[in-house]
Amino acid sequence: MAEKSFKYVILGGGVAAGYAAREFAKQGVQPGELAIISKEAVAPYERPALSKAYLFPEGAARLPGFHVCVGSGGERLLPEWYKAKGIELILSTEIVKADLPANTLVSAAGETFKYQILIIATGSTVIKLTDFGVQGADAKNIFYLREIDDADKLVEAIKAKKNGKAVIVGGGYIGLELGAALKINNLDVSMVYPEPWCMPRLFTSGIAAFYEGYYANKGIKIIKGTVAVGFTSDSNGEVKEVQLKDGRVLEADIVVVGVGGRPLTALFKGQVEEETGGIKTDAFFKTSVPTVYAVGDVATFPLKLYNELRRVEHVDHARKSAEQAVKAIKGLEKGQSVYEYDYLPYFYSRSFDLAWQFYGDNVGDTVLFGDNNPQSPKPKFGSYWIKDGKVVGAFLEGGSAEENQAIAKVAKLQPKAENLDALAKEGLAFACKI
Ligand SMILES: Cc1cc2nc3c(=O)[nH]c(=O)nc-3n(C[C@H](O)[C@H](O)[C@H](O)COP(=O)(O)OP(=O)(O)OC[C@H]3O[C@@H](n4cnc5c(N)ncnc54)[C@H](O)[C@@H]3O)c2cc1C
Image (cartoon, rainbow, N blue to C red; front, side, top):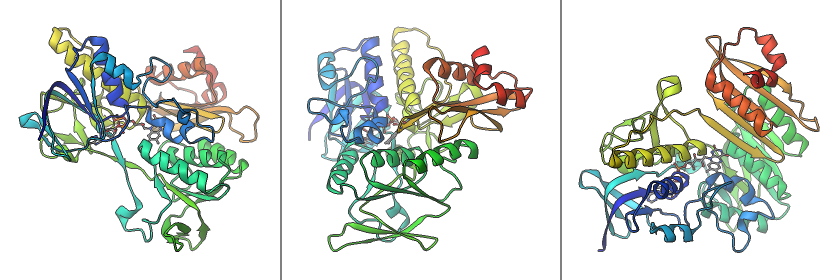
């Protein structure tokens, strides 16, 4: 079988891979030195789009001639870009074996890839209901959303089941974005989740009350405190009903499940040090194997701001960690020093006309500020998280770019928050003063 050799190999073709390639191009890479190996059939792209614009009826991202790619808001990295830079895109190629001591990867088709430096950017995979043996969970028209193939299948089902009934299983940000996208496609949407409010890993009850109210106003049925325990299908094997633990039964033409993910690290088990489910790295994303770096969702890295190891599954970190790893790799080659990764956790989501941003850490007490009435024509509100008398986290819905920057500054600088009542009253004004 064929063997190919590269100086640098990026394993994975997602967000981190695209941004790593862009940083290599910036720092200088010779034609033929760098390859991206991905099991997906397309060049790296901005994965968050899959649960947003990509699903809309007139999804711009699906118009003829448009390629999904990375580089939102800046230089767009289309397949021609990689070609022009001499970066090899090895697509539709799944790596099934990694031998790190031998600097070798092997694909499902038996090809061997040698590298001097490897960047692991394999991201995460979705947790499936079939993993827990949920009855009937393998029926047709039960979807998950991670890759563009999944999104394309969902788009086809949305077209086929026009004005039908959709059930979203899961109340995290993916569930919320999917609920909105399916509603925009005129489906009759219900959302089911076990927690007392949506997005419980981040939202306080006050924040969640706004989104649940807003979604209810859009006609989305929210069913909380219960889970899907089984599915029945019709004679074609297509899902027909969802059985809930509390005894209720929901009709469904389409079910989309968003119940979380797990990092894809299995290929490297026993070969690199791991920590909290991810591949342990230093502040330059180098793993315990000096020729191997890990970035994006799979990396457990030292988060300087909080002086602890963290794994972060958000797009901003995927981009920045990839850039940091490449700067470190090229810095070592050029004998230039590189600053340690100094990251302020950032996470955003968008649905309907809403857009929220979160910076920092969601630990400690919280104060809510602004107008979180879901009926408001222009809702704008936020929340601060306070730990040991300091503001450590900040959330803002409906803010302008400047206001978002102000909120970010608060989370980064961690100012004192002595009077919570005043803070709740001042809200954004407090952020803008810092
Ligand atoms: C639908 C959706 C919406 C999202 N929306 C948001 C959002 O609004 N805001 C936000 O902050 N974050 C969002 N995220 C999270 C964000 O997209 C991820 O954190 C980010 O994509 C991680 O980048 P990554 O490069 O580490 O992994 P990924 O982008 O997942 O890329 C991993 C790549 O590796 C490939 N791969 C894996 N294993 C192999 C193998 N063995 N062989 C070959 N290739 C392999 C995969 O096919 C994939 O191409 C969203 C995620 C999803 C799925």
